[in-house]
Image 1 (cartoon, rainbow, N blue to C red):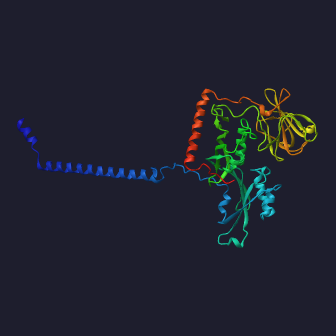
Image 2 (cartoon, rainbow, N blue to C red; image 1 turned 180 degrees about the vertical axis):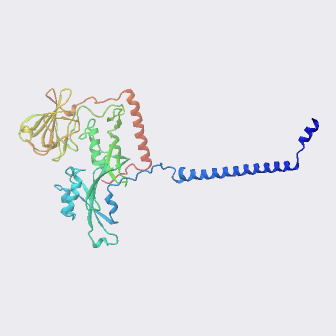
Image 3 (cartoon, helix red, strand yellow; image 1 turned 120 degrees about the vertical axis):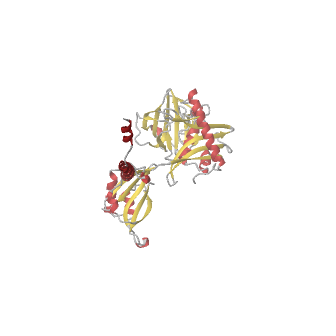
Amino acid sequence: MTIDNAASREESPENIAKRLIATQRRRRARRQLSIGFLLSAIFIGWLVNDFLAPDINNASLSAKPAPLAPEINLERRAMPPMQRQSHEDQLKKGDSLAALLARNGVGAGQAQAALDSLKGEFDARNLRPGQKVRVFRAWPPGVDAKLTEGEFVGFDLIPEPRQKVIVQRLADGQFETTRQNRPLSEKYFVADTLITSSVYEAARSSGVAPNLVADLIRLFSFSVDFQRDIREGDQLEVLYTRRFDQNNQLAEEGEIIFVALTNRGQRHAFWLHHLDDGEQHYYDEQGRSVQRLLMRTPVDGARLSSRYGMRRHPILGYTRLHRGLDFAAPVGTPIYAAGDGQVIKIGRYGDNGLYIKLRHSNRFETAYAHMNGFAKGLKKGDRVKQGQVIGYVGRTGLATGPHLHYEVLQGNKPINPRSLDLPPRHELSARQLTAFETTRAQAAKRIGTLASRNNALTSLPR
């Protein structure tokens, strides 16, 4: 048994050689398999990278390409390169767009085609005298503009500060109208000046626009008597805004953010404050609204020509009670509703000429006489807002010159408008006063910043 086992453990040279060859073949097969697997992995990685993975340079693109920006009309692609220039004109009184185009050498057929395309987008009848219009002409490259008038290719206009209307001729000769929104940016300005003649002149000489001057005069009309109180050396401060287009051109006047008038040593200051419900009003430093139930002076820039009380009538020649105030002003000067109310009488009324009477709360009524005309569409029963234009100064009825006769009545009894001492229409709550303090602080910061930039009197020319 022992001899047999020993013999079995002895291996012949042939068997050893076969075993070594088999081992080498297995190793070679394993190497080939490993190399094949590695090459396969590299190939598969290349396929994935080339066909499935996103291009590194275009990694922000989606799998589906985004559509191209929409064109106004594909006909424009066929339009050849052209040189272009424009000429600006403006509508005159009694003018029309058709007349303006004709005046600029546009043929009747092309003008009508352009206006026809406009009809679906914009009503040209809403345009007013003074509206600016740019008329465009074009000619091929290489042609001297001095040697050709070019051909009419459209026009554009800005009917509202935030909107532009463009009429453009396409390659097929048809015209197309489009609207463009004009984003505006708001800039702040500050005026700080001494009054030498009037609040109006002081504000205008500082660059404040006429419509904003009218606004600030109305603000002070509740607390300041412009006929008696204003003195040389009084100080006017105004923080206001203007809105500009993308070319930094003035598009529209903004708002008065803060205004202060130091009159005879007393400072009247008001801030524009936005409430949570979206409304906005002007308030004094105690949080009381500037507005009162009625205005003392419902006309801008007027001179007090006759006071309340007994006087000798300039035409009739005898003495009687003058039941109101007379404000001399040029014919056509706007007259404002002294307060929220309802029209209870409108039309011609005896010696008063053209006349309006309004009913307000607390049994108050106001009357306006010798008018030149009424606001368009105003009729008996209409509701009006304080400051709304209701008519225009005239000299109808018994009048020696153009003026407004203004009366205030309570319970049908006349009251001197100068003696009115009415409470504020709005007053901020304790919670609202906290937000109002923030409004005041922001205005003070803006004024300080503008003053440090020496911008105190920087604005547009008069």
